[in-house]
Length: 528
Image (cartoon, rainbow, N blue to C red; front, side):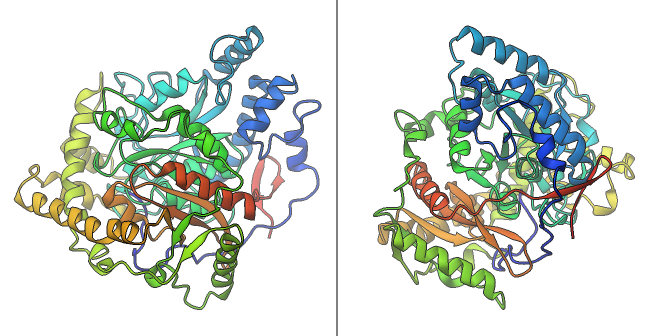
């Protein structure tokens, strides 16, 4: 689902700032794994491919570096759930293909290790469990559609990343980033809340435990962890990427998208995973939005020029007493203007209170959609200890200690009580469509906007209920040192403009900095 916060409250500005300089050699020695190439930490896809080309790096050395990072950092951060036992084999295969100049070896993702959120199915030695012991040992019928495309692009499946269990839809009472199998994930910047539900992908790329990663979003699940962990997240238009083979909450709202350290890296991943998948019919219609030549062509340094970007101050720019966050955001708006952006300020979404009201209908529909979706996924498994949502509820009761049932499973129970799309659900769907049409769509069309910009992710519900895309880029830290991002959202299919804007903003601000660790033996911690 996403994370726990009141959408009308500003969800980003709280917690504790613990990022300080590391002592001399711990990380720098770890990254000097290849003579002549000593910057795997924070290396971009472009950097890595250049190192491959210049014979300064191999995919095997790259995978070995990330495996070392995982062994050192993951015991504390808990961003990685499983490592692929075939990762080094895949790396050797990629190195061999590159040497032979095999077809496909020039793909931007060829030989690049990627972590997948543990609700994205892989037909290999990895489990797909949504963080729950209930699905441990289950066998999926095939790779998820996006995984098929990643393999075709030559990517190395490094492993599975942790998440808020069941995409935070078992209960809203469990902490962000917690799952029974993965434990409690932590932001490498605060050692606190990593947000969710795609917590592991964000933690892992932020802490350089993977080159790139893939998450999923129903409402805020890509955007929020990216914001909290100072990385880039792209939540694509719903249907632009296949959800087939993904443990899903709602096909109407769910989207699979990249979480990476840079906009360019995220776009390379996006280019690899978009397109038609006949196991997901929504991709057929939405594929018309995919531009000829892909999305990388929109990585333009002057991408901000002449873009019309809207600012809805109420409720999205309410910083309370946080003057540092407020000043940071206002400085970014000045930067946008300086780069040629046309800012349309002081706009209003007339029905904003209704959109964020508990009576909007989003919760009603999601409960029904989840039951339908999870039952369909479980039914399709080749082998599985559970075959229905009712089975999951029973499993949790019988394994209450293992699954920490003290957190509850109220959302599971609520979903199980539903009986398909009836009159109440149809009324809720009609209301959500009307709210979207008379709210965000009217705002964008009436003001001829290319995008809106908000600090943090409190805009996520507007994007979620309409199936709209969003891109979040590191923006800075609040007064307590917690990272936050700037989110750019637009209408369906507006990814080209959003990428231009996000890339232009990133290049003009360059906020992203890695967390710094000290080591005591093999255990990592932040220095205070």
